[in-house]
Length: 95
Image (cartoon, rainbow, N blue to C red):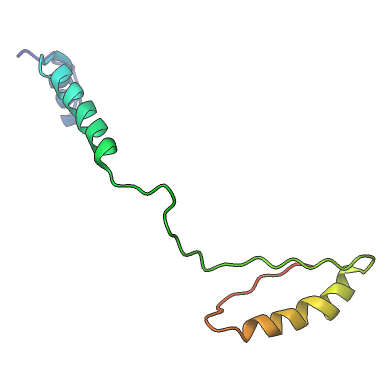
């Protein structure tokens, strides 16, 4: 196995030269691809996994009201009620 000596090549250059000139490189590539395909095929998966997403979206429409009115009459009172629910950590709202 003969490597091409590239002037000023460091460790990475010499390592790349070894792989470029090696007859085992195609075998290593094919082995890696087969191992990857085998991993994908054998990976356990569910069609509909049960995932808990601790989030909820609440949308309220108030036709003809200004954003300030919606904030005062709907958003702030609703936030206070939602904070009373157990395990509520964050509430984000827009009006």
